[in-house]
Length: 112
Length: 116
Image (tube, rainbow over all chains, first blue to last red; front, side):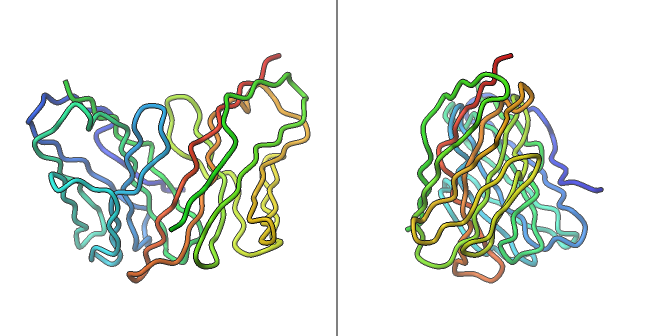
């Protein structure tokens, strides 16, 4: 079965650079979520999209932005990267209804 | 707001031992409850879920029952295996403002190590 695809799997950036993470949801899933998981931490909700519109916003820094495109894939754009942005970034998709998501394998971002 | 509290680890068990990982929650509405498992270096996998009170979720020998009266969703397995070594996250999803948004609130995670 198709899963949630995230790219790239690993990314190394320097401080103050920008990064773009991509997420391709499961076909026919209309909702995409982004989470950030710091080392040894629980995942923290960043932002979600439903039918290409932002539906909820969590602890996402102003330096980050995201959108969902017409084909339902989503991109998380991160600017002015800081060392503390080093984390695992997960995307998840769902058909809505709170029945549990399917997570991607994550993008590991390292800021040096 | 919503919150999830789960027992702190790490938990170390011998193979075939009984496992319980406690999880309690606070929610304003009627949440759905989940257990996710994260193996080393991998993403989050849904282990089991329950969407209403008294529901029992089960998968791969793991079970958890949604107890509204005690606001709990404890994870249990009768006989653990080395391959169960992972980090386990309890989570809830509560209907939120915004159509179709069901953000997950996670507990801090419990690391389980099973030794032969």
